[in-house]
Amino acid sequence: MKHKLLTVRLVFFHRCLPVFGKSLSLSLSLRGRAAMESPSSAASRVDFYGFLDRMRRPAAAGLFRSIKSFLASLSPDEPSAEDDGARVQAFYAAMEAAFREHPLWASATHQEIDHALEGIEKYIMTKLFDRNFAASAEDAAANAEASERIGLLQRFVRPQHLDIPKVLHNEASWLLAVKELQKINSFKSPRDKLLCVMSCCQVINNLLLNVSMSNDRTPSGADEFLPILIYITIKANPPHLHSNLKFVQLFRRETKLVSEVEYYLTNLISAKMFIVNVDGRSLSMEENEFQMHMETAKLGTQICAASLSSPQGSATSTRGLQKQTDTEGSRFPFMDSETESLTAAEVKQLHGLYRQVVTRYTSLSKALRKLSIDEDQLLASVDADS
Image 1 (spheres, rainbow, N blue to C red):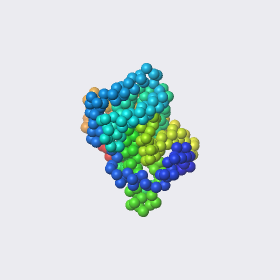
Image 2 (image 1 turned 90 degrees about the vertical axis):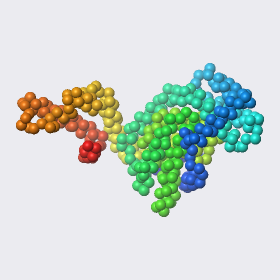
Image 3 (image 1 turned 30 degrees about the horizontal axis):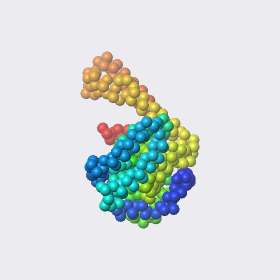
Image 4 (image 1 turned 180 degrees about the vertical axis):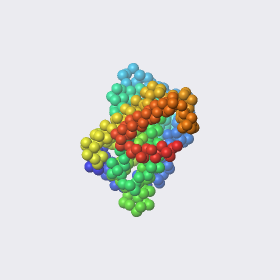
């Protein structure tokens, strides 16, 4: 597993590892400043609305015409995210120069100029989102491939398959990281999507830092960060993962894809590529065992799909069975009956119901065994729920 991860990192991290490889400087620097800003935070909204308010002023009419003219120039062309990305990056640079020379920003600080550029990015990319996000057949196929593969891996991959030390197992932190990563598809601007990635990675980094401090361990580095991020990505299965990463890479201002931001984004790209190309050796198991897990996972997916699409009353449809029994008057028509009071016809009906239950239980047990689900554990969970 670790050799595979190092191979992946060598491709992507040739610039990042010398800076970040074996230290927790990222965590320390992040903890030393304000908490990571949320895309939906009040501060974020104020910055954007402040930008829009300034752009509505008569003095900004020339800048606004430049923006509208740029958007219109893209419309006649066939959509190409790569081509649009290059043109958008050039427009960001041109607008930065225009802002610095404009009277409205003549005495602006560097931060105020930066806020204006963030506003430009959000405005433009919200307008261009439908044109460039998951717009090609290749992107749709890559999204489907990643989502399907992650869906299968979710069924059997556990932390030990990624060599994650037990001391780093923390379901609460992992769940928080999962929720942050799943938000990535809720936003349209590259910056907001990237903030979701940053928030997810910050949760992981804080976990590594807290564990190293409380257990007097050597500070964790990429060898422990990346496996956890891979596991979080598998658990999250964020929608349109390929397109979200591509969108951020192409349309986030290049000057912002540096330092820890670049490191975190590169890690997530590596995690995605690891997942798409994963094999048995990558998960510390024999290849035939890996293929068996994948096949049983596919079977489980097919069973779930068949259950959801089956007609009412089907043995695989819990909802249909519930509705059928409810329309007969009761889910358990003989639960309150005394044995002596049953008629011959009712005994015959009860025997038929018994045969249905046994048949369904036997079929379900076979399917669960193929999915490597322990029957005793399943029954225990059912008893707990009831």
